[in-house]
Image 1 (cartoon, rainbow, N blue to C red):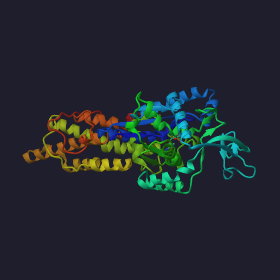
Image 2 (image 1 turned 60 degrees about the vertical axis):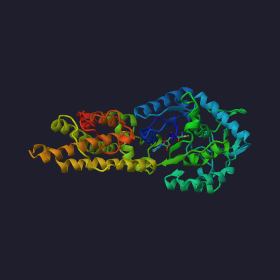
Image 3 (image 1 turned 180 degrees about the horizontal axis):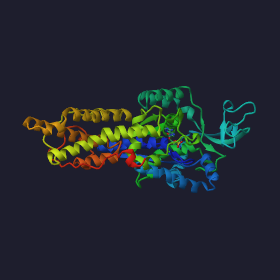
Image 4 (image 1 turned 90 degrees about the vertical axis):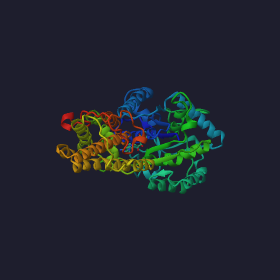
Amino acid sequence: MPFSVTTPIYYVNSDPHLGHAYTTVAADVLARHHRQRGEDVFFLTGTDEHGAKVARAAEEAGLTPKEFCDRVSARFRDLVAKLNATNDYFIRTTDPEHEARVQDFLVRLRDAGHLYEDTYAGLYCTGCEQFYAEGDLEQPGNICPLHKTPVEWLEEENTFFRLSAFTGPLLELYDRDPEYVVPRTRYNEARSQIEAGLNDLSVSRASVSWGVPLPWKPEQTIYVWVDALLNYHTALEYGTGTDVSATFWPSTHLLGKDILRLHCVLWPALLVAAGYEPPRKLFVHGYLTSGDQKMSKSLGNVIDPLQVIADLGADALRFYVLREVQFGQDGSVTRDGLDRRYEGELANDLGNLVSRTTAMIARYRDGRVPEGETALEPVHERVAERIDALDLTGALEEIWTLVRAANRYVEDAAPWALARSDDPADAEKLDTALYTLADAVRALGVLLHGYIPEASERILAAVGDPGATGWERAGLGLTVAGTAVEQPPPLFPRLAAAGA
Ligand code: MSP
């Protein structure tokens, strides 16, 4: 079955930080895993470029909105490449192909009778270009909490989407699949928002000029969230030059908990209204925090992913964010914590295992894997189960049980002692030990391909199975005796040696 996965498209009003790298890494782990299983995969990411926030950031930078978007979008694209993400397309909402399709979609909604004109009235802050509820303002005097200036009463004629009419269809969707939104707490949260009743939504803006014009009233622009959500479908239609939406839609969306309502309520409603299939599944992850706060540019507590990659490599970053924080929950990340896991788990647990195994085979068996049967238990079935449940942290822990089991096995089997013995029974035991280790290392190369692709590639090359990442090779006992093995340079050089 084809598999299609997306990240949210990132706002270009500020530079990427580790929180943005997080969703991209998670989506890439899924994309790589499904490719390993031989499935057709489409992995989409990109940038969200319209709206008042971006226009204001451009103005502050002294650039036109488009120039500004070009500049910042390129930084996100560069990060995606440096993370070794294997996205099939990088969408920008300023792509003319996207803009045209957003307009078509609105026409479709209108023709289906789901839009109407009405007056939007409320308290408006021109600094924020946003309407506020009275309760969110500082009193007395209705003061904008951000700008500390009084808001004004504003009325504009807008186009509204009859979201309220979709309560029933949405509840049906949720009832049909209790795992429609994962984890369960997020499913409950989204479902209760729907049950509480939905208000119609203004989908055009008279006050925002940096956006896609409403086709039948071009002095208004389409609400930036409608424009943004549509990326998930439009990209499939034009991203690769052929329309692959029939193959790859519906997609699985990964998103942070701050944008749950827009994805789990508005987005399926828009799709159903326009006659499309709703998303396949939505996974809502938590925040990477620093101290107790969400890592964010405005709080100034960000870890720069490019710096981490320059110091330790993309594998270290990818491994750390999925290992440290249970995927789906919030969790604190620090540079120190990252260095500790790099040393303790990547360099010691995994790096040493690979280097000891290959060194011993070179030394005791002339660099060829001896005949033998594995003495370890495979983990690939449990790993695949966890990944299917989108439990990327649980899957990695399952893989690590094999790393730990192999390390315990080296200590228990003590091949160095067996190698000193003249007893032929020990020579056979040594064969078994070396086979078991070479084979475990090979399987780890396959199992870890999604998480740490650079190390995986080097591991598989070292044990004579270069490029053999297919999931059918993830079990144990599949190594062919006689395979030539070579000791690689350290997979994860020590921090001091890495210059960090
Ligand atoms: N542009 C919208 C998404 C539109 S999708 C149709 C947006 N962009 S964003 O750049 O602000 O956020 C993109 C994603 O990054 C969101 O899923 C958000 O939750 C995630 N993260 C931003 N900071 C984060 C952390 N500190 N931790 C984890 N994820 C975080 O929202």
